[in-house]
Length: 566
Image 1 (cartoon, rainbow, N blue to C red):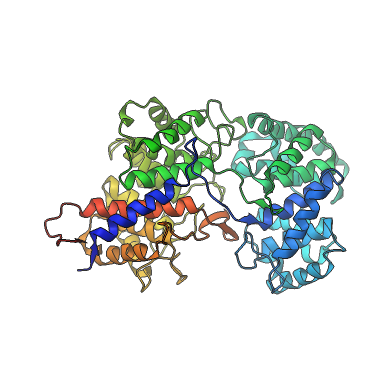
Image 2: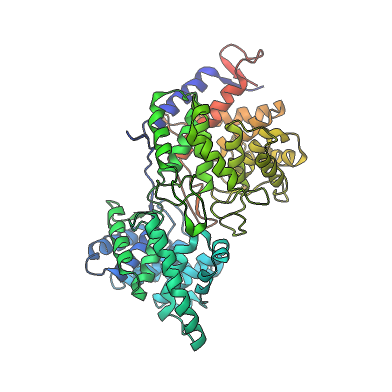
């Protein structure tokens, strides 16, 4: 039996919680220092150069200079600062530099094209939409050899709302931008021109609906990358000049001091939801410092429907009250609200739970945005489904509640052949497997054969040092170790004691002198191609694991003095 000293555990939790609270702003929001994005910066400079070449020349010059400095010695680029070279970022960076600063970037472009070829080119990109995007930008830059064949986007899909939602979902805005770009890239016949005459006004109405929903800020989901793609399309087509002007203004406001742009500018609700659930698990539920965050959650619950994706009012976005409502963040925020001492009288919590139940797919799963879609990057998702089950359970819904029962039944059918589970928005497969194990265990399925297989996969993929990575031998991360510890603890099986203790010991050793833990790029931006770190999520997941560990073993008669043992 391995013992974890209680003093060390308590000290790590306290120091970790205080380190996380130091990230809290006076308005209750938890902040982060995200890395700059090659993808966002490359797309933005290309868009600004096309839409506002004179007025934004300073931003374009600073952004292209930054891109040149970020090129790796091998000639490629990673998606965010610190990431290894990969195909999508390299293709987009090369195209952007060729479009905006070809003379100043000649040597950089040559090296980038060579590296792109060495990595197999855009044919290696598994996501069809992202592959097409890379091909389109390379074609615009005159690099037809690297681009390969370019297929036309079916803009007509915007004429059929249900089909569009299920096929495009959250990619509606960048899809419209890319489709508008194609006007002068691909020839059209008479029939095609007639169809486009009907589709283009419908597409622009959709774009304007998004613009209006967000308060006409030009933010377009608070993300420079899709905002840049829309701006490129508007610039090349000449459509909606007022929206184009607003996007230019937002991109100017969003630029970093170093001349780059972030992958996603505003994740205030994402970070704050995780922060509160982590702090509650660490014993801070009644801490008055968390009251402003609850007020922030109350103020940012969506009061209006998001008609573009047919989402009713009542949920939360990942950014602010004007953002796009999503299930993942909504579920995490509901778990956070359920943990406050007076949660039983919180009407915002009750209304949010009703919204969450209403967003469940007919098959029992939960998707990110659109109900009953099969889109690979929207849903159904085992991890999001597990978060929804957790939220309902945290709020007091019984195991046999119809939504929980249907969610659990779907999860029991969604395992991969090796017993693990996928996670659309965090690195596979430890994260997905661990949160599913925890959810199913909490609602009465800890002894189910499917859960046992998933647990066996977690046990088999634990690394010799006690940590967990994604399950493929990659070095362990704080996030995946925290999730795995939570999953194993939730089963209540004492046979996992040694694995849990070794994971907790690794987490204690990984903490820094300031109480913080190092963040790893486990958050998916483009699944399989681009990930980014989120320090608040890292801190929160570690705290939740340690807090649940402490709570699980508290009061055990066989705990030796000065130690927490299992």
